[in-house]
Amino acid sequence: MTENPRNDRTNPPIRFLRLPEVMKRTGLSRSTIYVRLAEGRFPRPVALGGRAVGWIEAEIEEWVAERIAESRSVDERAGERVEAAHRIPEAGWRAAEARPVR
Image (cartoon, rainbow, N blue to C red; front, top):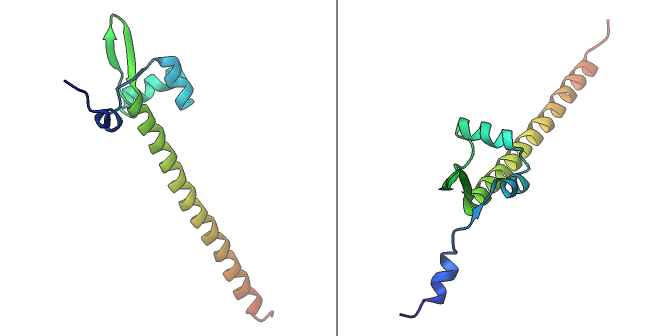
């Protein structure tokens, strides 16, 4: 039976990452990873046998991409709030300047 080379491109092989590589890719410490696992905010590892575990590379990449997307949307919303905050005082100062002094 001949393997379909196209299938290799659409379904890349699953690759496991061990903890040091997960830490390197995410920038998180070991303890932070396990705290987030307990909170359900990090991909779960897969038992590889004995005491060994590994994380699925695609799940870690997806988690990182989600953090980037969240960060970008928060930055944009924060920028909008900062712009709005700058507009409000200016309107107040203009109104104060327009009042006659007694």
